[in-house]
Length: 245
Figure 1 (spheres, rainbow, N blue to C red):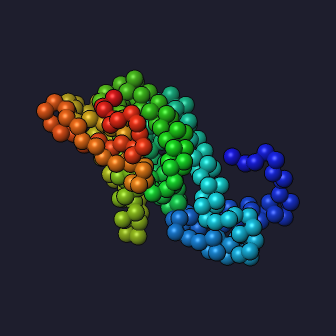
Figure 2: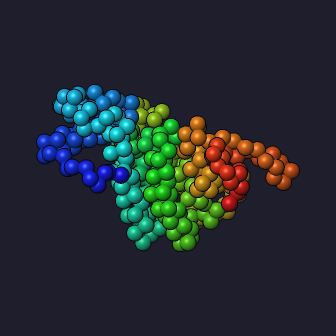
Figure 3: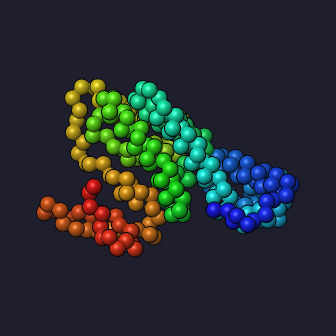
């Protein structure tokens, strides 16, 4: 959150800041987050000293862009919810959000990299997860989506397909669309008898934990129905292991 007492930047300083953010967005899209503030300054056509006056480090640049990228994904999800055909809304959301990640490597890393800072992971969950859950629920209510589907399934479909995207980008960058079609065919409710899913979906909190940096979570094992079950928990969580919800 910005300091309410901070003075607004001079016009030239604000223009340089916007040039740096634009340059960062372009570099992140092309190369992912593994660029330096020096790279960003060079791409923006400003001096390195100017870049460091506007941003102390690359993390501040990422923070400045992160909320903007979340807004873009949230807008796509909101448009999907406004679609009167819930199945079309669901498929359009997945297609558009994946296409955004194909075009912007930085966006993929911002949304799917568990090594990013915890506050960004929390922001992504709090903004996007309720929208995705609503998209899934509408499709089930309209009878288009298999009734055992869950909002977290849509999240893991994207995680899986961005992995395909990364490994085939130089050979066939749109190959992920083949597997998206296979996933979607398996999710439809009108494809005849459904095969029972062998494993239950993770709930939202468990999904969030998989996106949490490994140094802030751990595993605990407890007994359930005679079996030993291993679950992810926050290391500083006083509430004990997460049970199925």
